[in-house]
Length: 458
Ligand SMILES: [Zn+2]
Image (cartoon, rainbow, N blue to C red):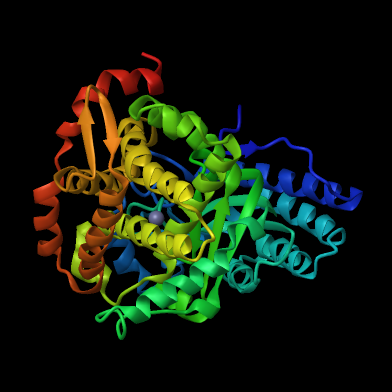
């Protein structure tokens, strides 16, 4: 059977022979990790294969009073002959694959000259056997990000558990640090703190932990699990707010995934949408750098600008609001870099164009390929585009999109204030009202034929 939950990028990089050997071992581990994920995933049941199919969340919670392990992120729940629920540790359930990974990790840590990676591999080898995943994750979060080669392989994040959002799915990435100097994430982090202190209602409410944020801009070597099924452009860890308080935030930007997804989707769509002169005058490398920057700005804004109780207040509207908020605030942060002379006006135009025209159309038209999760993004981008249309910042004529950049700049600014207020103090009803006004999908219509053809080839 072909392992669709493992993916690797072939590339030649300058590595020592020991590092090469180490990478071969890590890739083997990730292949096994993909196998475990294939045992866990099951799209026909909300609880995937973490629970018996006939179980309800109520029943699990009731029985967890006797057996706390039923609610552990690292156990599978089963039913015995008499119908009673019991739990099996991941280290037991996936013993065959995990003992292989443990052996490989043991071999690998003797090869690593990097102390932090070596310690991670040692802890990984142990966790495979004794289920100490929590300890492994906490250690990974505490690594400051200076290591050249970085591996993450563990049951991470409860997104796949549609029953209780508890069980973690196996996934992993093997990465090598890319050109950090060029993107200078630390500078973006400090600009965000500047914006925050300037804002009246941000001053006291924001949770800011700049000193506890680390950003890695990485080239990918291999991906496993969920990461292979839908390669992320960027991600930030951990998800759990209590853990953020303790360990800070770790942001990963995956340059190869960005290249792959944008070259196949966003760029061709953008080329078809706007007049060809602008993109044609810019080098491929520069386009690519700004695509990476665009993802980085979103992730940094998303991780850093957080408000108390926004999940509770905004309910179902939280994710669409949060995602657009991060894109708008990210764009605002970039404008400060134009003032500082780090970016020039062409870079800035590209950033606005990618995010608010390119991604808007590519996410909308590719939603059939990526499933439900992408809808949260589509909703936000659609709201933004209608707002920009109304403000004369963008327009549609003869099946092309035109952009008035000075107006777009000012519309991004005013919309970011609206969304920041929603995140800071808005209610579910406030968000609903705003979306009702601007969530109109009719502007996509004239492009349906042209873009569907580009994406699906029909
Ligand atoms: Zn996001």
